[in-house]
Image (cartoon, rainbow, N blue to C red; front, side, top):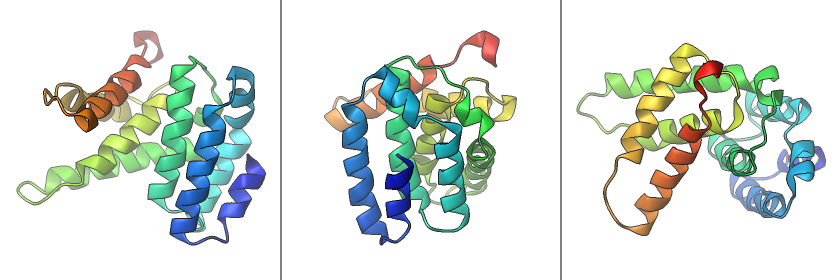
Length: 173
């Protein structure tokens, strides 16, 4: 996985997105043991470093981490590598900052999609939650989970939110 991440460093954002979609396809085919080899402290730290150095956009990071987290949740893998990485602090900060931005934009257009994606990635990957991040994530994803529209896209959003929320265990908060 790390070698695939290094390939992203010299690509345009569109090329990165295409390569990440290919990586996501590879991860879809992995069994639990193979996936555990991907969900490592080293990989999460490398992703954080690439974000810091502006070699990986936040949108592409979310695309990659959401798939990693989704598969992590789907296969019931509990690993503490994410919370031991430098990336967890960045995500907690991003969740809090994005919530504050949305609160400040009372009547203006809010970027709720970004906050939802950040919260899903966070809950999919973390085992022990910070109180501020968990309160923001739960309230944000409950709003998504309560949507009653019956189109396919909305149903997928609701299912993702519910799966992310299912990762929370009271004793880990």
